[in-house]
Amino acid sequence: MLAMDIPVALMTGLVLAEAGKELIKSEDRYKRAFIKVFTLMYAAIFIAPTPGYYFAGWPAWECNFMWKWVDHIYDVPLRAAFSYVLLAVAVIPTYLGLLLGEYLIKKGKDKWVRIGYIVMLILVGVVILLLWDITFNISSTYAKYEAGESYPFQTPSFMAGWAITSLYFWGSLIFFYFWLKKKK
Image 1 (tube, rainbow, N blue to C red):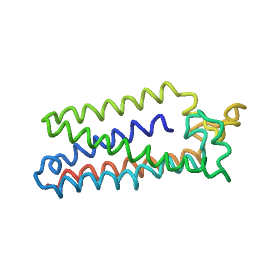
Image 2: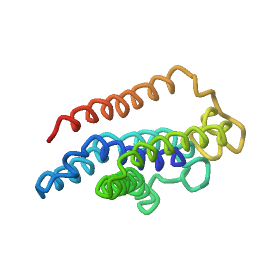
Image 3: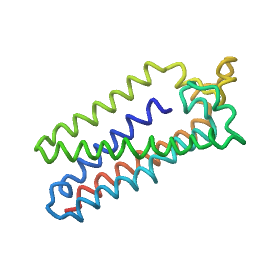
């Protein structure tokens, strides 16, 4: 859901900044460029597919049931182009999180990077609590949502997809966090 995707992307940029702290502090411009390129690639490969997946199967749910037009994206190129917005929602906040982390690290405020991503994680929890009814009641279309036709988040087919996308993202973030920490 977009309400969670943006803070998670920002959080990811901060996490990668913390992990790549030695690269950021380096005087070597190639190392500093590496962490930036890596973060952009990470966002495109490991974050962007998740909102794309949910937009393909449950467009209204992915958009937090904000817009009726998501029910009618087929054969309308401008509406289908919203998938590019989803890519931007994954990549831009991740990169901004990295830049914020880089700024804080260069100022010697490393602990604020960790505080920042913990705050983002808490924010996601708050969003989940505030949007509990639409987060855990799944409708693929706005029309179904309006008609009250939804099914629980725990439905096996939906839950399996969620488990796979979650493992893909969180597993990769944990792996690359420790991988980047070893980079000097």
